[in-house]
Image 1 (cartoon, one colour):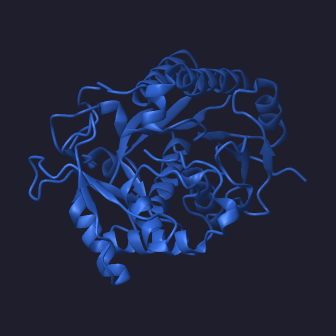
Image 2: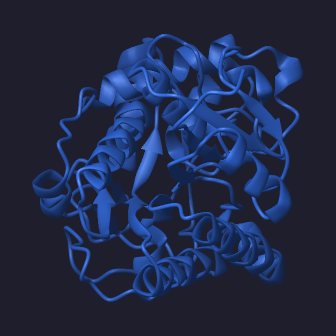
Length: 340
C-alpha cells in the first residue's frame, strides 16, 4: 500500500540522500525514494521505505510518484558531483545537474508541489576571499560542478517567483562520517575527500594518502576545511522541511559547523583514533584549492530549529572508519560521488 503525504527523496540511495532517508524515517515521516543506482546502493535504503529505480528527469515517472504517494515535499539529491570529472565532462554535468533538475522542477510545479529542498554546495563560492563565508559572498564557481549547482539555485529562485513553490537550498561544506548505527555511509573506491581517503588507508583498501601542499597561508601550511557529520547534515534537511511546513520563505543557507580543521589536524586525529601512523606524503598543491573554506552558519542557526549532535572531529572520523571497515568488497564497484 502506498504511503500518503510523503516526501520524495531523489538520490536517496546515495551517501547524503540515504542519511536523509534515515533521518526522516526515524522521525516517523513517510518517505519514498527515487534513485537510478548509478552511484547509489539499494542496500542502504531501509526495506520498509518505498523505492523506485529510475531517473529524476523522467517526468512521467516522477509525476506518477507524486500522485501515487500523495507527495507534499521533494528533497533533491540526485546529481553528479565529482569536481575533476566535471572539468573533463562539463556538458554531462550540465545535462545531468541542470537539465534533470529543470525537468524535475517543472514536474513538481505542474503537480502543485509547494516545498522543495535542494542539495547545493559551497563550490558555488569558488576560491572565496573571506572566512567564514556568508551566503551573500560572491558566487564565483571555478569548476562546472559549482556552476551547475549555482544555475540550479537560479532556476529554483525563478520557479518560486512564478509559482507557489518555496525552497531551501543548503550549501554543503565538507561532508564526512557515517551513520552512527552503521546503517549507511559513503560507498565507492574512488574518493576525493580527506576523511574518506584516510578511512580507506586505515581499512587497508588504499595504500597511501597524500597532502596536497603544505605551504598555504594557514597556521600549519595545509588547507583548512569545515567538516560536518553527514547525520547532522541529514538532520538539517529535516529541519528545513519543518521550516517550510510552517510557512517559511525561500532561503539559501550554508551547512557546516562554522569552524575548520587543517589537513594535518585531521590526519593527526585519525592517527589518534586508530592508534597508528598514516605516514602521509606531501605533494604539490592542487589547482584551485583555496587555503580556507569555513562556513558562516549564522543564518542556518537563526532560521532552522537545528542543533548539531556530532560536532566532534574524532566522532566523525570514528564513524567513517567503522563504516569503511564494514563494507564488503563486492559493494565497492561504483565511484563515490556524493560530497559537497
